[in-house]
Image 1 (spheres, rainbow, N blue to C red):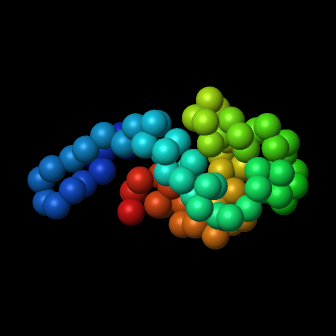
Image 2: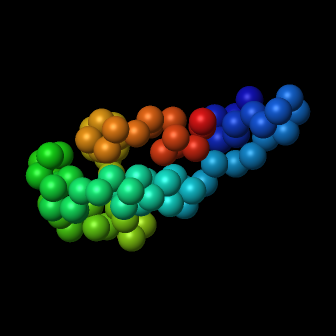
Length: 83
């Protein structure tokens, strides 16, 4: 099975796209109730970086994404569209 595919049911597979991950990340940030400034402060990144993630202009580094999931209290599998 390709790492780009995830099983749906028994025989069907769909592609997970970067845009799907960006949308889920943006939704989690917006639903957190925290400001971009607060999220940035907790992660040690700029408010502008958080804004870029919400707009889909940029994706966080893998370690930042992992820490962002902790700060937002979301399951990384949900953000990565594998759950």
